Image (tube, rainbow, N blue to C red; front, side, top):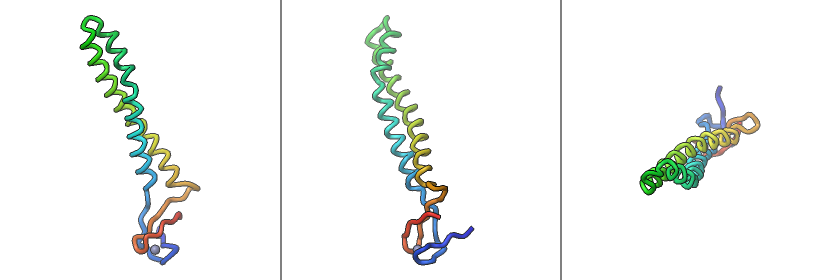
Length: 108
Ligand SMILES: [Zn+2]
């Protein structure tokens, strides 16, 4: 399949995945932030488990809870962002292309 630029007629066109890339990055960052906001939940769990050594338990719980939350949040956020970005890239069932010759962005 050969796609040509509607502006200059060049065949030097590449697929443009800007929204997918953007969505994945934004989702990852947002997910990590959301996960980190759950640090209090981790601290509470740690405090409950570490009732023998409360301070250590809370610290470890907060650290673990925050870390696990950030990682899982980033992964699920990135997946979600990728999906949303993919929908933007392929809206109307078409792909976005960019002309390497004149820089025109178009759907085909
Ligand atoms: Zn062009």
